[in-house]
Length: 172
Image (cartoon, rainbow, N blue to C red; front, side):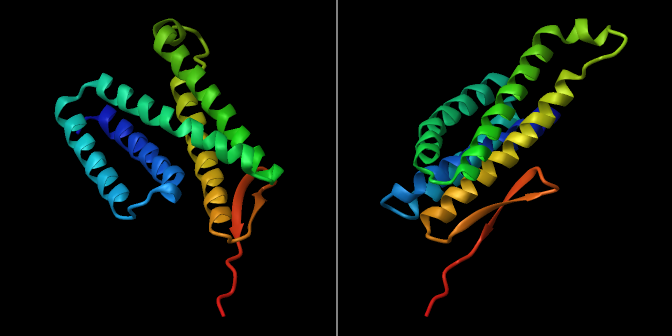
């Protein structure tokens, strides 16, 4: 597997995980969705490793991403907690900034590399997308715990990084 594929395959797998978390509560057949997503993820990894076609990744990633947007929005508008909505906003902001850095890097890489101080758009892309992944996972964890009636609460590490603390109801 090439370096690019080893970067992109986990990103795609993460999107499939989001798809599962977002759609599984409404899925009627419990085992079909995870089975299908597992086979799809494995097939994608093999095809992406052998074919090394960047367009394969981009098309798949964008399609799965577009499938996730309506559900993320649904969970956002139905959440009663401002703290969870703030995490969703951080998710969108980090996605926008990461995408902007990626675009700048793709278009202006050669020009920026010749500057005395290189703004490192590609490194910033990774930073913002890492934050996006963290915020998306945190928001989805909150939503899933809320669906299961587990009383989630948002706390902050170092006053900034939100995390979800869950109190499962006691079973009697």
